[in-house]
Length: 333
Ligand SMILES: *Cc1c(COP(=O)(O)O)cnc(C)c1O
Image (cartoon, rainbow, N blue to C red):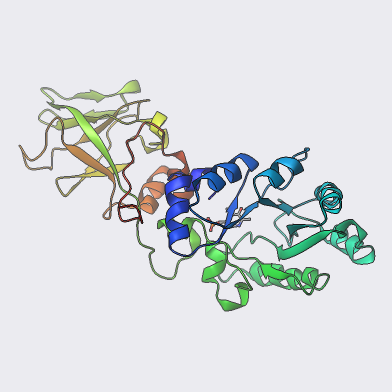
């Protein structure tokens, strides 16, 4: 549920998953954990990936019933001290197995093997790690990481294990252990998660046409005049832009759907406006006040990401706050 539930709203997304039976959630920050705790309709475990965030956050985690992921010896020291004072606390222990991002190094794990006293008072529910190359199922680093994970787990044989994000889940059962942690795949992101079959698209995005013009003589569109259009071209200007997360990299590259026809972005994306060439859409089919589909079944998050030279994760988490958001099909619908 990081980044406001992958940009789609931590409250509605969290609530929907809770009603579907999910009882274990991960967030990045303390504040996200607090927001999710408020939004969930019933009991659930919420784990904070960034741990104690190098600060004195143990009391805040506790006050909201959040469980930290311990990434460093300092995290362990602080949470251990807190746990012993409070008569015991849960945590997840994070070990780095080759991504060099978060988690204890092999040497730090070995030191805990020699002297486990820093963990006194902490009930390690899971030992977890994170895969660097899981979207490429033939990358030998996946198996290397899994082997290092097994070694680290030897230190705490009673704790459960978790290593798989979305892509790791698609690597198969040996990577599932006791808990998978899929994020992007839940929302239909497929291409960068190594999904075996495309995941169902759960998000649509429409932009409203403000103005339609027929170009009277060949000329250029938008800032910097980066695209020339011929006389007779029909252009639609839509109320959305890079301030809404319709990335500027989509200038002259993105596509939408209008009246069932694929229409290209022409010229640069502005802060609040996009211009599409709708010459191929039957005349009269759309006009000011009509919508252009920016994300739809025919043009998915993955498709738009590819046009922008990025991944679906960035498209989703960039979705701006000015859109009117409508949730359908959830428990409240
Ligand atoms: C974000 C994250 C996930 C989920 O990743 P997806 O690729 O979106 O499935 C899982 N585990 C950790 C540690 C993460 O940071």
